[in-house]
Image: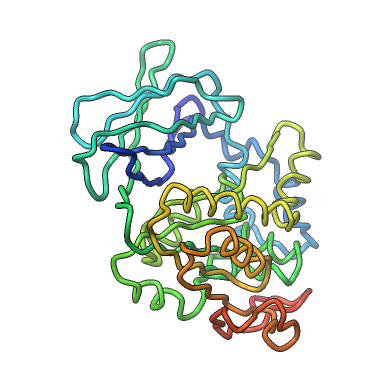
Amino acid sequence: MPTPTDKEITVYPTYGYRDNNGWKIPMRVWVHKQRRADAVPDSLVREIVDDDGSIQDEEVRRCRDCIADLVADDDSGEAVMFRIDDHSQVYRFSAKTDANGIVEQVFEAPGDLHGWLTVTAEVTSALGGKSHTSGRVRLLEPTGNSVVSDIDDTIKVSEIPAGARIVLRNTFLRPYVAAEGMLDLYRGFGDVAFHYVSGSPWQLFRLLHKFLIEESGFPAGTFHMKSLRKNPLEPRGFIRDVKNFVAGKEYTKQQKIEQISGLMRNLPGRRFTLIGDSGELDPEVFIDVKALFPDCVEKIIIRDVTGAKVNDPKRLPDEIQVINAPLVTRGVSQFA
């Protein structure tokens, strides 16, 4: 179990795309230290989920685990290096980690590399100690098929249309549940590349990757998530910021359009299937993306959790393939 002084490194799953005779790889690394579990008082844990007195002790413990990366101590000013597979070449980020412990850069790699790669990142402390961890990169050829997938209410039941209080409970208190039938659909795509584009904050990556990829068996892929300002040392602002991640639909819409557009600009010869749900603005996002990149979008699939096909059909025109799903209504949870 890490101590509060141990540095932890997260190498987020990413991809590489061809550029002339080589590869370009957008890398994102987070360096941080975990805070002690008891550093977050019960009162703060309960306020995050708007406890009405019904929250159980085991739920408080689960909530502590779920917010661990939200309250982690970000390490700024760290120099990060990495190696690819067993190659001796060392790649160094030109900048050090920022105030959030994040460093990002696009790197060039030799053109003779192929497929999935293992990236091992390393940070050396001021006292000479080293911390390291591994992540994965998938090198994608210029032509082929990719799937862009939302997460909440598309492949994981979050019940976003039910309202913030229920979403927060599903995120921080209850065991995660996969959306029925979606795993079989995703496995049925065969050997395609997957890109998970979500309005959830990066600080939930660990939980989502563990549940979706490691436990549920969804295909491994790249992750593209929302940046969330956080200041766990200022409780009122911290609670507000955590709760706001379930709000701000327009911000999430722009975030998704920008991230999907980036994929298509870097991979213009690939054909993309876009999969989301009607609970947020996925239909609108995907239609806008298709207008920007008409030659890239093969198909749009929407899991209809709001009955939009009947109640608001303009959101789901005939060009969109609709998957009927259990309806989510405001103030009501299937787990209640």
